[in-house]
Amino acid sequence: MIQDVIEILLFVLCVLLSAFFSSSEVALISITRAKTRTLVNDGKPGSKALAALKEKPDRLLITILIGNNIVNIAAASIATAVAIRIFGDVGIGIATGLVVIILLVFGEIGPKIYATRASDSFALAIAPVILFLSHIFTPLIWLIERVSPRFGIGKETIEPSVTEEEIKEWIDVGKEEGTIEQAEQDMLYSVLEFADTTAREIMTPRVDVVAMEDTVSFEEAIRVFNESGFSRIPIYHDQIDNITGILNVKDVFSAMVKHRKDSTIKEVMYDPMFVPETKKIDDLLKELQVHRVQMAIVLDEYSSFVGIVTVENILEEIVGDIMDEYDKEEPDVQNISEGVYVVDAQMWVEDINEQMEINLPVDESYETIGGLIIDRLGHIPLHPGEKVEVNEGKITLVVMQMHGRRIVKAKIVKHPPTVNGNS
Image 1: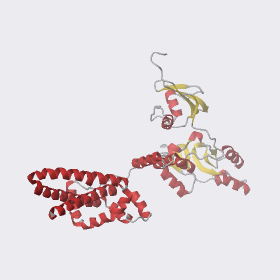
Image 2: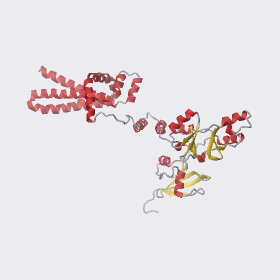
Image 3: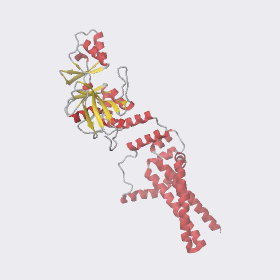
Image 4: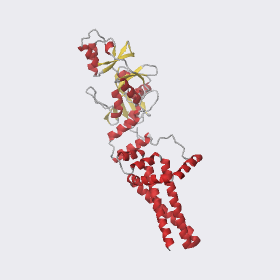
């Protein structure tokens, strides 16, 4: 009788230990290393033990599995012994069914559900215990770590523990739960995409660049600075492809104040910094900081001048448009009536598709709305009003405004779907 009571108590103890190891597995494995570092920085009790366990996740998992298997096997053995003594050979089946149900409910499912609901506090509480057991099981862990690679287990992986896509998912979850605002979500996404953006994607294209020839006078330079509102302007020699320097308005004023009438802008301009259009803007920002300049000249694969990139252009990729007193606040996409929009012809087709939720055709031969219109027309538009049909006539693109041979504004007309049988 006493023996049965002792064995039943041991069985209950094994079930409790099974619950402990099962809940520990969920709590310790699910908590991230980033969260662990936060807990350590906050000085939470048990955080150092938790950090030590997360440094060696394989050792952590082996420790929990060893403990869990030992107590589960012990529980099954004790229950079988008691059942056979009471019910004879039939007791094996009774013990098996009983142990499976008890361990499943009280040793696995229940504890794991609890651990998912209180993962942080529970992980901090049990981390020192699991760390102590990992030292106790060291000989067995060492043997498993030596044997498992022979079966292709435990090999090093080159995959990162946290991917960019996972970070984006967490940002989306934060937005859905209200912990991250829309503006913060947009900025975080911009930071993640920052390293993948090239100079070509953010540059001011050559046709929009205000430049001066190196023969202009200081008075003429001041007039251009005043009209454009820019503080730095590229300087070229003979032709605009031959950029020879960057002129700062402060240097012009300084020369005029010092009455250097015989000086020319060649003497006060500084050497330009040239970068390829494929340059990643994160690297470009570092180079601009190192050279202590605010502007870079962008060249294509043929070393032709195609545009400029400023520090402001780069920062706007993260924080959005930075407006000053010379900028005209006009949206890139204007909805002027039902299904009719006026857009900046320099906008990329991909951006238009995303903002307007349409599906304009994308091709390697063009990037912007203006490029799409020219591609479909087959020639440079001769005047505003020329139009093309895309998406099987569902959308019409119309040239609205031109500057020389460049399309400035375009109109997008979304035709409503036609009803079968009606004209």
